Image 1 (cartoon, rainbow over the protein chains, first blue to last red):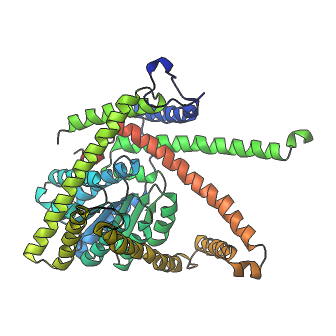
Image 2 (tube, each protein chain N blue to C red; image 1 turned 90 degrees about the vertical axis):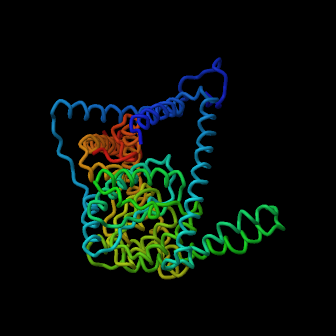
Length: 267
Length: 204
């Protein structure tokens, strides 16, 4: 069955293109697991939620920056607003801005995307207000730089060289700029925490940073920092689903081995 | 910011995009949404560039530390659009500036990556623990398998390198990707349902 072209009249409506059935199935599984966890939670069931050392280290990093009297540097890389990693990064930004405002520590967040910059300014401003220190929000510290990937990298690296941050936080989508930024941060002696949805750049962060959140931990970092129980309980649902995926992978590997070596003929 | 308005807007557009992804029958409306995204993007770009210009103008006028960099930024910010008024074809000043200034500067920053890879590898490959030793040995095999001298040393290095990339490398990558996929879908749902609101401000 051919895929439906956008704008096709309703007369040739095809309800669900077959290539999207596996995606729908996965989506429904995640939805059911999440809803199940939320319903159980509302009924009073408590879940043991694993801790994320990388996310917990953010507060330690901000504390260190405060003690040293140096700023905190935050970046969400080159991701645009429609990426889940960017939304997760903005959640973390809210918590970081809240804590830096409480401690009176300057926060710098140069931005690669104008839409993300606008949202980030709003998030940082609101977090500072909720911390009881609206004056802590400095619009000149959360700003749009350029859409050019390496133009942004040059600016962010230069800014790190000038402000010498004690903590650098890399949360979001990164490409080739990841290692340039992380190595510049390392050269400043900053405590570095990173989380990205890019598996290739994750390897660079693992080498260059003190803490790296792996895989889905990026999406739970904001909840861990805020202690938001609803967000945290969704980690439980994700862990359940991962257990199911691992089980399916093991069954698949067993069946593939069974078939490849024609073990059925030996039974 | 009106949180309720943001929530309902996010919910409505989230549900619409989800519906459109699985049942693509509202092509006209979908295209309209994409067009509006471009309009919003360009408006934000204009706001961002003006804010950047004002920020650097302030730094230059107050002559704060490093104001020279701000001056260079302002000159760059003005020079490209002004040059574009005289055309953007291959013989134009704009094209010359792009090819002879912007492209080399970007290439220079990108080329720094080579040095940073070397310094990061030097730190990462120090054999301080068993996992670090495994990383060091794997990296040595992969690197030797990719250069002619590796084949000279031992003919099977390229096959070993490929096996390391294809088996443990792909397995680890897929494991992480599965986690990211689950996390992305879960975050999307949380955003649409208004459970995850961190991106439009802290709850309390």
